[in-house]
Length: 113
Length: 112
Image 1 (cartoon, rainbow over the protein chains, first blue to last red):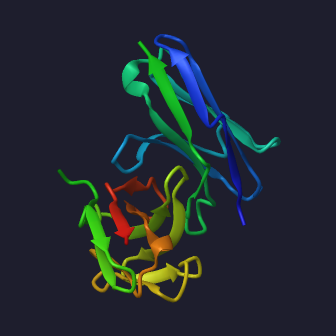
Image 2: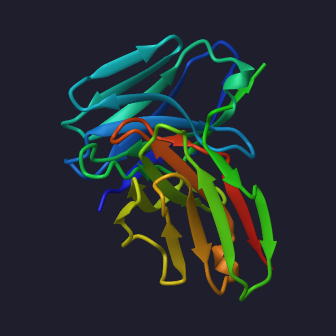
């Protein structure tokens, strides 16, 4: 089955700096890669996703890149703000085969004011 | 608010008791997914429905776990004879077919 590895497990940045979180996946059939943000006591919130026919996608301060050959994808957050502090999860799935998500272990991002 | 809702938000039960959780998906979503999340880990897929059909249930953790979605709207997840290892957050997500999954707030289960 699919295995998703996520690094780093914790990341501390100064407000205004950029943050990068990296994930690798094992199943070459995976073609859908969402990122979720989870705040304490809440369910995961979808923040951006990318499909395998696209190499990069941006939404304001957030961008995701995908390298299918190397089977890795990354989340980039620019101009970080204290409210970006949360746990971030990457996930992978086969979009047209149930779309059951396999999650990475999470990255706790702390943005220091 | 028209997001995914889950009930109860917290459940404390004694080992050996049965528990049932409810999930109400976003109204136009025909797919409903259940995940389990233990402390410090990412969510782990359990099962999913398309309308009332349960299309994948091999990843339910044991035969003590079962789920239903009888009318293709809300779903229930039941755990029989709870064990301390069942303590976790149980998350529900819904989607329109293969599109984006939106999660509810979860039900936190504590087995004492």
